[in-house]
Image (tube, rainbow, N blue to C red):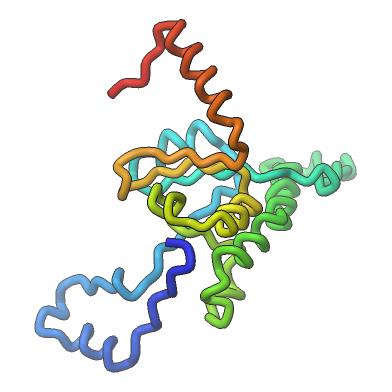
Length: 196
């Protein structure tokens, strides 16, 4: 949840109790000592990533406002380098895109907006972004200034919410409801229906 504190690192005594427990031959479960982490796909392959990960309880798609000033520069490499067999498997443009993605403004904004409660934690400096596991209650209970801050990080998000047992779509633009209704009407006209 937004603003939640990170779990404290286990003390040496807690670790000793886990290791010395009578059933210590069994697998040690430390999930309760660890925060939830998020994986960010630097290489964009939307349909394959949705096929592989959507439906397991944690997919989040964010739409951020791109900065036209910060598009990756074209990469001009010499023919000697690009035709060398040692570099045949390298996609330099894709590598440049990944590097560019690591400079995206939303990364720093997410830490400022969602990481305020853990700025003094050692983890804060080591992660490129911070995103909470959002659900319908988070949006319904948020104050207007909180929502404005969240929508400064992303302008839309599509979240797989276990808590809500479904998908959550949140869009900053209040007029999006009109667009969504138009899409749904078109689907209905074409006899397309979401399977239930």
